Image 1 (cartoon, rainbow, N blue to C red):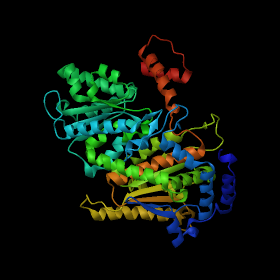
Image 2 (image 1 turned 120 degrees about the vertical axis):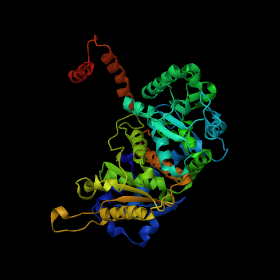
Image 3 (image 1 turned 90 degrees about the vertical axis):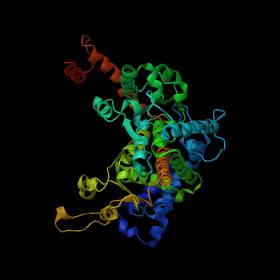
Image 4 (image 1 turned 90 degrees about the horizontal axis):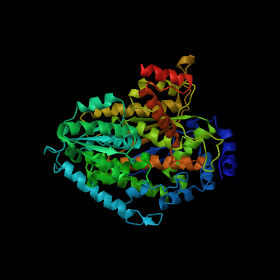
Length: 521
C-alpha cells in the first residue's frame, strides 16, 4: 500500500480540490476549538488555524487507517525489525518505559539492561555532582564537556539549555565541530584539573569526535601523564575495547545499543550530559513526560492522537498544497536550540527518496525544517512569511508563565507578539495599496506550555519523534537509517589524503582538483 494506490487518499485529494482556496477564518467557530485544540501534560495544542476542515481531516485519518498506521505503531513498540535496511528494531521508547514489562529484541529482554545502565548513570552522576569524583590532581569536577556530533550533541545541548531553571552547579560545554576555533575557544574557558570530558560516539571512530578527543587527550598526557586520562574521560560507545585503548577504563564506559538511532538517543547514555546538568531525578522526569506521550500515541484513537494529527497536517501541506517547508518558531529563548534539533530529527529521518519497497518514490517526502526564536525572527524572515510568494506553515511554541524571571511584563510582550503573529498570518489585512496588502490564510499551530519543565519538555520531544515516524510511515520510507550522510564522509578521507600528500596527482573533477590545489598552497 502507498499513497498513490490508497482509495482514501484519492478521496482526500478530490475533496481537497473543492476546499483548497477556502479561508481558515471561514472554518472558525466554537466547534472548531472543541475539535482542533487539545491539552496534554501541561501543554496546550492549538491546531485551529489550519487550512483544513473536519471532513478533510476525516479523509486523512482514513488514509492513515488504510495505510495500517496502528500496526506500524504496535510493531515499533514491540521491538519488531522496522528499520529494514539495517535489520534493527527501533526502541528509543523502551529507554523511557516506566514499567518492567519485557521488550524483546532478537529473543532478549532489553529492559533489565536499560535499568542496570540507568543505575550506573545515577551513581556516576551523583558522584560528580556531590564532588566525590575527583580529577587527577584531587580537585572535584566543576566543568563537563560533551564531545559528540549530530544526535550526540544536538539533543543534549537543546535539553540542557531548555531546562536552565533546573541546573546543577556544573558548567556545561559542548564540543562538536572539527573547526579548531571551537576547540581553542573551549580551552580558554576551562581548567584542565577540574574538567570531565564525555566522549560520545557509538563507533568510537567518528572523525570529528575522535579527533577532538585525541587533541584534548594529548594535552592531558603532556601536562599530567597517561594516568590522568582515566580521571577526566568517560565514554559512551559500543566499542569498549577502543575506549580502553584510548585510556578510558571499562568502568568509565557506558553502553549504546544498535536499536537506538543517534537522533533519538538523548534518552540513552548518549544523553549523559543531561542528568549531570539537571540532576538525575529531573532526567527521570524528562523520561516520564516522554513515556506519557508514548502511551498517548500508542493507545489514543487516531482522530485525537496528537502526533498523528501533526503528521497529517504535514501530509496535507507537503503532498496536497505542495508547500515544501515548515518553520518552528519558539517564543522562548530556553528553546533556542529546538529548531536545530528538529532539523536533524525530521530531515535526517525523512529526507529519503527511496521507499520501503526499495524503489524511488513518486511523491514528495521530508519537508525542509527551519526556524529561529521570536521575537528575533519577526525582524528577520517574517516578511517572507506574511507577504512572500511561498507559504510556510508555522509552529509557534511558547511558555505561558515564566516563574524564573523578575520581568513578567517582558514575558507578556513576548506572548502578545506570538499570538498577534499567528492571528496576522491567518486573517491578513486588506489594503488597496498592493505592497501594504496582507493576503492572510497562512496556517500555523500554536503549542503553549504551562511552564517548561523536565516532564512537559519530555512530552513535547516525544510528540515530535512520533510525528516524524507517522510521516515516514505514510510516505512509506524508512525514518531510521541515514545513508545519505555517508558518501561525503567517505570522500572526505580521500580529499584529506590528497591535501596532505602534495606530491600526489589529483584524480577528481577539475573543480574539486582546483579547490584542493588552492588549499595545498
